[in-house]
Image 1 (tube, rainbow, N blue to C red):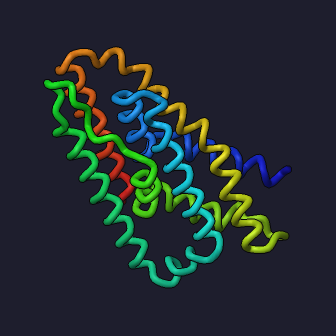
Image 2 (cartoon, rainbow, N blue to C red):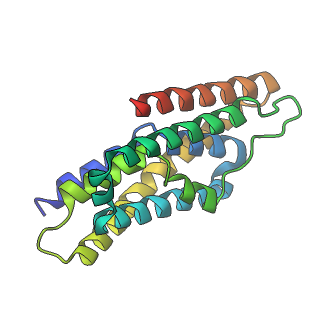
Amino acid sequence: MNEMLPFATYCLLMSSTPGPNNMMLVANGAHYGYRRTLPAILGTNTGVAVLTFATCAGLGVVFTAWPVLHEMLKLAGTLYMLVLAWKLAVAPAANGRPPERVGFAEAALFQAVNPKSWIRAVTVASVFMPAQWSIVSGALFVSFAGALIGFPCVSMWALFGVGISRFLSSPARRRAFNVIMATSLVVLALMLLR
């Protein structure tokens, strides 16, 4: 139990704080509602869990052996976030058409290039893996527990988007919201690139 509390706190903080996933979920929630954003929420949690499992099971060793791969991943993640920001920024607002909805597969696959998800996975693998368990059992446990802790946290961001959607009734407000969300993604991308 003494080891579980720091792990749970870490997962709670990583899932609750602003990041690429949460900005994407706010935008999806605002434009599509919670129910239609649920596949993206599940995809995000599934992608993070798979990434955490793979890292805990040994993939993290690859990045330790070849740090240049980690730098390439950070660059790829930054570029992808900039593409998402561009799509959001240029999404039409006047005719009421929202930006493209992110689905399960896209949200899950995004974790492979999301620097914040990699930071989380590597930290979990290096700090919170249960030492007395087998690698597979420990990796399954921290991946599943992290997903359970993360689900309500990322849902909160989607619900925040749903809550502010009523303020997006005019094209000008929708446009401003899209630009603010796109700018947030750009700032996060550049911060994670450091």
